[in-house]
Amino acid sequence: MTASLTLRREAMRFRKPFRISGYLFEAMPAVVASIARDGKVGRGEAAGVYYLDDGPENIERRIEDQRQVIEGGIDRQDLGAILPAGGARNAIDCALWELESLELGLPVWALAGVGTPRPLTTTFTLPAEPPAILLEQLLEFAQAKAIKLKLDGDLAADTERVRAVRRARPDVWLGVDANQGYGGEDLDALVAMLVDSGVALLEQPVARGAEALLEGWKSPIPLAADESIQSLAELEALGERFDVVNIKLDKCGGLTEGLMIAAQARRMRLGVMVGNMGGSTLSTAPAFVLGQLCDIVDLDGPIFLPDDLLAPSLYADGQIMVRSDIWGHR
Image 1 (cartoon, rainbow, N blue to C red):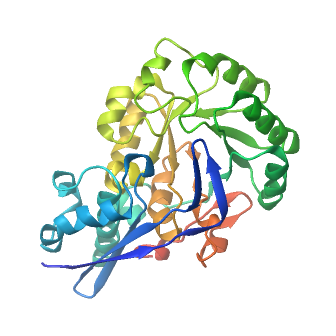
Image 2: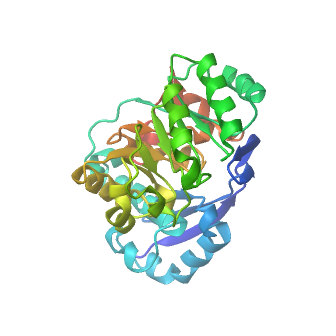
Image 3: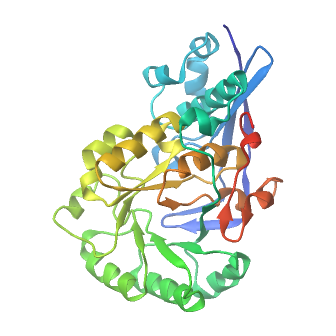
């Protein structure tokens, strides 16, 4: 049965600029793909992967190159043959999940086999800013049970950041994300400081492609791969150098592969984390389904978008809950 594909751009401007190692973001523009068939419409939102030049222009180009195949009725399981891992496949994959959910009259979580969704404790993310700014922003996250702090690769400045946040919130689970900001020479000193501050997770300390720096080095706190592992194939190649894999649907190409990565990570005895590349409630909904299988959940993207009117309804008492009817059949 043929379908109709439409694409639209969303600006996704943040409430305030957001700093990480090497970047200052004012927005995370996205593409929303809609696939209509027999009166039902499935939607998928993707921002792509900025550090791989996978932004809205390339997402749209890749999808348009395959428009005829997509409108001809392709299955989710066959998308990998026409679209690489990344934003384009994520947008189409998620649209097909919702379309299938509506056509069959089953919620996405049932199709995915994850069980009835429950609220999930999520991290709330702080940018790589000076301590005074971080303390102000912490006031906005008074409900948080978990905080993720961005680092910028300057050990002295990062030490001040971590200690300031820990002093202000001794009660929370605290993780840090280096976003590829460190080299091998600073890892021991960085981890010693993190251990002293009660940090529970170090995400992506070294650059993508520099994972050899981790060979033979054992961290006393879990290491999470983000930029280093984009897909199932990369998990199988590099997973042994990490303790946790952070699955982002924009990286791996959608919920279909995200579920496969989670299953393979479990077989490899790795922890499983779900995150996002910013994004609205629409992009968070499929990640929330995956989050039901995860140890660590980092799905605070919608709260940074002033135009996302559904965002306030998702969060309560440090947790996120996305209703089934927001994306797919209730």
